[in-house]
Length: 559
Image 1 (cartoon, rainbow, N blue to C red):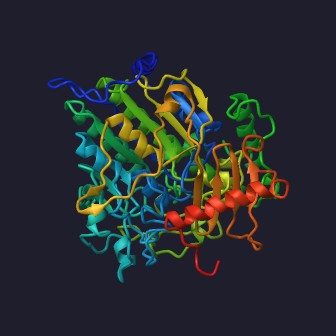
Image 2: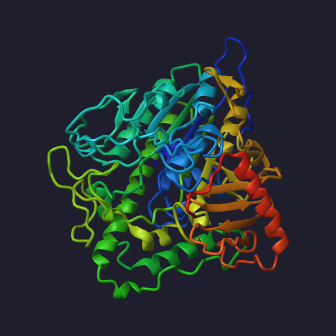
Image 3: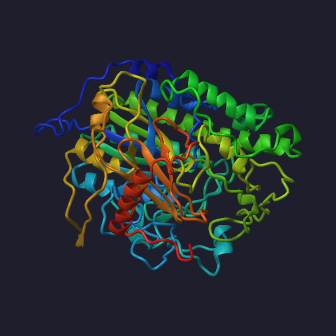
């Protein structure tokens, strides 16, 4: 990172600004940037214990604050719908994925009975920009889907345009409507509401998104109005696509294997006291096979190297954004939130069927894309389609169990960094233990902007938002709210109360019994104490069932 940025970051926090400016003066409300990574593991970045080179995010953490109990909705599109609206994902219309299941909470697209942060802040005078991955509009499949994915045919709409970003409050829009992309030539790329038909030969998604975000900041800096930017990277979601020079940095890093990397991450987490004085919070490894007995060591080490390269390049892009903010005099009064949409993915996309849904089987110029079911080709280039799989995902989510789509901590707990020199009063580098959730981002933006949350918008009755403002956390580290946080995705269920007690019912449960964990004493959910505290379980389950009724949650049929 450039020294000029580091110097700017050295400024002391100056306290909250007035929510609005006097007539004739520059609007002094803070800019807000929400940066969302995709399938990033809890411990992937350096300031959460990772070995991946992320100096820019680490500096944000050193001069801002880190959250250890920040939660998402366990999967990409539900989390995005929840983040953008301040509603639980079922209320926002995406209880599962972006396909219409014919139920109010499962229409596969964001409801118009909720408003986005951009819609509210735009009404309040903010510039608004979306850059990156959308994945909150219904994406019905076409008869020529295979040809469409390979850019052989053109359609004007990738999804109904009424739920494109430009029609949900964002004035500047660049990115993909679908959820999964070829990083070198992405499908469903739009500028505004128009398809982007071609990209340069040297195109790489993460670079293009970062450069677009920088261009928007440079333009907004000449305005008297603040801005809200939602920068949703594709990285490091599969397929494993990275630039050769970034892969080269990590070519030897993972040759030591799963266990060595996981234990090293755990030791760094202990040394940085990520979980305070806790000394024994590493959950047992979920796989018994030893690295030395792995016949695919070369492929597996390369896969994780590509994953690391993708995260590294994202951090480089964030560094460019921070540099642009600093050069334009905007850094001190910009709230930056960085988080992931869910835990690292366990999925092995190399075993999927090529040419279906959002997964291409050939490049634009007709080259076959290999899905290496037998690990016969190394991941990294555009002509491969693979993922790191569950064994590395278990490492990426250190110290937790499980991964994306589960309601254990490995699925729903995200690294979260907040940086705002003029507004965060906690000492730099503070670690916050308050229980917060993506639904709280809307409430925080409302309080910062002074915007009014509408009861009606564009003729639709608007549901009340569900979150609470995080400004008290920025001031004293405490949320001071007695509430439950609830989770459901494909029958993966959980509830966390304000005291840190958590009940979980996995979809694979044959008995339907709920598990109980004390997250204060058992951060990684290693000790189910449901039998010891049956009355607590009963009371929490009762509240969970009530939440289901109130938030349009319907158990999956047959489960």
